[in-house]
Image (cartoon, rainbow, N blue to C red; front, side, top):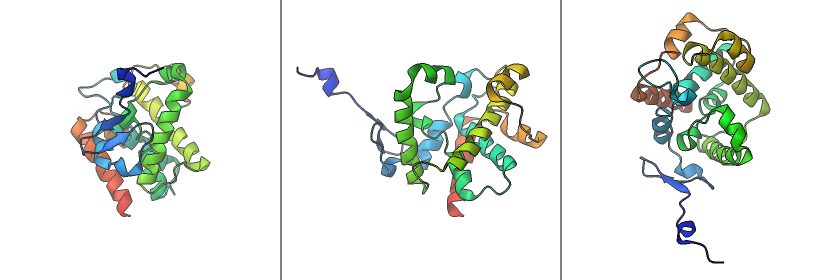
Length: 203
């Protein structure tokens, strides 16, 4: 059976503003640029955009909050673990941020694409394609802490509801809440994420 013209012309890559052409099914670390990641994540909304404030609460701002919470949980967090934390949602600059209930409906096919992209991103920034389990555990814990704070401060969740889905509230300072839980303009989120990653890469 001959393939249709539509099937033959199906595109599995995305052109990035840097000029890179990223293959979504077989991503190369050579086609991944920090400027594209920061630009994209600063324009992807957490909570499907259902948050308070003039601006969206972006994935770029979220990962900076997660990194701050991870540092609060583990005082001896080294630069590579901090970098891995900042990049834990980096695949979303290509595939967007789907809320957990929708991911559950889609199933494994979504995770396969996401994990390939994340593996290529890790290699691009000098990290192992698959992170050590201890790193993954810490990142997931800090991510749940961030979800609790975001859900109750920005997304309209009651505290009892947030506890049910994300666990108990984390320890955090008033300064951290002021710093990370007021949504920023996209340009600010992109700039701050870029600067943090570049600082860690220089160390």
